[in-house]
Length: 501
View: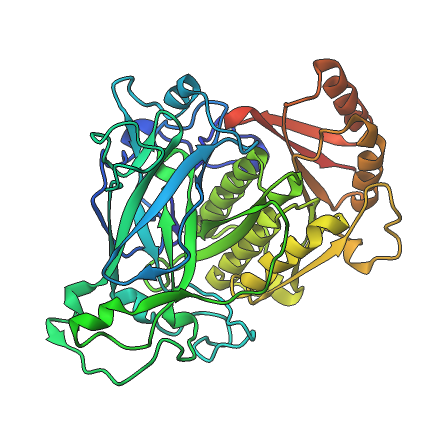
């Protein structure tokens, strides 16, 4: 059985090539009106889907044309002290990293006009499958599964509103809840402690002397997730944090500072780093936690540094298609396929599809399709490669049975000398239609990547700066070169399936 999360994007007018059952949204779970304490969690409350029950959908908090992202609003601390409250300033922005108009935010998030705050959930990401700095981890099996959950399973988290009346975003001392105000800014305080005061099963655990500089592994790592996709916003994560590998015996141990875990360096002037958690459904919900992809974004002038709306729609479509396929024991969507994520930007779609392929590989009893190794290639221009490679390296445990690689690719260039770009089964291109001067180069590249009778191209598009005339011009050219199926989804996103017979 696969563990399925509520959809981030509403399923609307789904095409034959993205077929799954639709059900009434009235049965969808509603987010809590306020959050004061949230226990450890590895996912956004995944929902199991028995064969005799319908899939539950998320509430209608995102049916507009805007998908908001939750971001830290500097300054914020990189360190936390276990047992003490940590303040985090927050804001929500659109895909252009702009603060929302108050009316747009109230409408898009379905807030009542009387509501002064969008409450936010706060949870711990535990048992994450994250590579160590040196690329090794003795706590994983050969297939990349985590053999056991470490110290993070003993943690709990609670949240409250900001307590400082002098904080710049508060307009009055009465606004003390944890969340976002109508200004688009807000904040919360969270506190991480051990369950049962440092005991397990009601008994104190004996500890040994350990310092904060002890070598750690993935079992000693945790992240703090703020926000929930159930609320129609894209959450973010703070971390990674590590702590000594022991359960505290005395209260004063809680005062030891949790230090950030070192990662491969990223340097980019005038940029803000935001890490986003994406839960990948697990094929065996009773024995395995969802895998969490932790994607780093750079919020700066480079459009490649962040994920755009079409990517979220396509992820939701593919996630549910794979979930249904696993449930119905149908042929895999991605496992055993050669996949290319064209102009990937952050690497989000390609990495997520690799994780979905891994779920298919682990769930299948029929291994005939695995004779051909699954591969995912992420391509973009030179300026985007550092971020792409960082995200590949940081998520190397997401899909150990899938070959994930990256390479530079400029539209219109020669493809004949690159073996990885030949004989593709699937090409994903999200939000690549925006520059009129690049139309011919893009079309040439799509043609070169498409093998007749084999390759499927999925093209995600949302109208932004193109006029209707220029948009029509591009898609007229597409239809002259490809067989095209078109559908419309939430957020004003259209998805096209291109093939050549």
